[in-house]
Length: 249
Image (cartoon, rainbow, N blue to C red):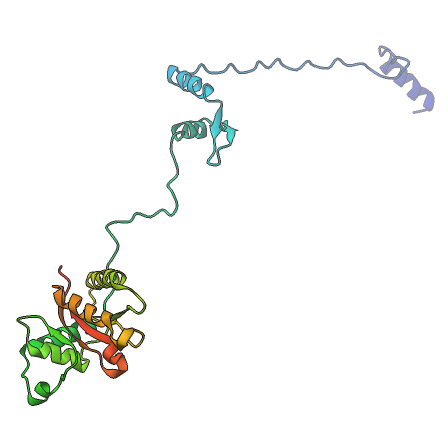
């Protein structure tokens, strides 16, 4: 087929076709978007409405430091803060103390030794050496007790647990300090103590008035079982070793 025949066939095929506009473009209308309506809020229940009204009356939440801060937006957290509005934190430390203070610990062996020494003093045999001991030094034994109590006290079988020094005190001060000291020893369960009254070297005529007073005061007290002059290395004539009764339970 020749070029003339082709051209004639093409023209017959496009005889009804209109030419394009001069700008060689076709304007097409765009489709409009569908109208979307916003969702209607659900109507709150009467209970929720009352709660929201209550929350609206509380515009701020007070923190532990005392500063006001807005309530959280979450309904559950907001309800929790409102419920906890009047709650105070537990003071630190978070501990509960039950009962009174515990008594101070005491060595069980010391208690056993004291009981053994007291039993031997009350029921032990008195030998010739016991009768020769003592001499003219100061001593006192409560009526009704065995001489063995004073013997063991003089031999140092009781351990000295506390001491009181009355040097430089006048009559009233010494008597008050002695009474306070003995009361504290009874309270703490201390049985054997040493009372230092001095030898009187600084007193007129080298006589220790305080020594005589202390001996008389101790002999008059019901809690004193016995006392004797201290051994040389414990003070000798300037001190007394005193045995107290056991504390009442």
